[in-house]
Picture 1 (cartoon, rainbow, N blue to C red):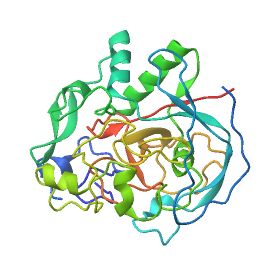
Picture 2: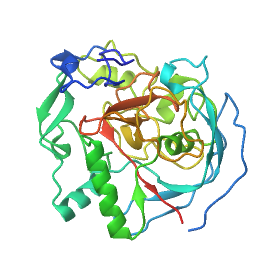
Picture 3: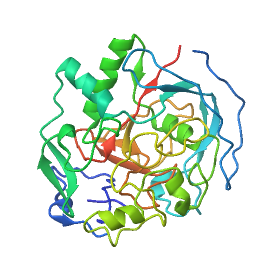
Length: 329
């Protein structure tokens, strides 16, 4: 199965439709007013913009905290010289974005549990998890992780179908239109007016202030992780971290990189040739859908604003989660 990750990290799938990820079996892990703004040309490198306190809102009790994302334009994708770049991150293109609201954090276990209880929703009986140095498909769902997961941690073991079901319920509950972000919305929000590889700059070893990713903590605490490619820092979390534990980007969004891969609305394409220039959803003809942001067990090449992943909509991994967007009038 193609992909640019080595088998020491969480899967990155690029096409191909095997009925089961045989390549993972028995794997030993080795390693409300709309803010508007002018178009901008972000700085290519250096420190991110000064982060100010960003107001949030909730549409209902139990609804996620939302942040207003201003309109603007940005360059989507990665330049040819970016370290860790993959061929499907181009060509770089300019995209004009309307304003929208996005979840301040990833959807948490508490928030998903409220939905599951209210609707009696069942999210399947199997999930691919990392335990005892092996990634395998195991019995259980999001509520039966075998490592520490509390209510304020990001939901995991969620496929795209589960995520869509949550957004539909949230729309009914709130009376507003909630959905998954398009891939362009996601990258625009993640970059937050930066052009560097990450919203804190180009240096992956600064990650531990901003993102939960593969690091020295994971190497020390996770069986089989000694040969992982890591960010050379310590964030204190071996697996996922409570949402909001790290610094936000300049739009006030937490964990846009790291913690959990996030499902998007878009189908997977192996380039941006022909993609919409206005940030709307771009569906594909295949079975694969895009995930963004990287996760707690990912190497620096995956934890970048332009980094992409894709998988079939029905596949569940413990490091697959999501956040929501609210459509504005």
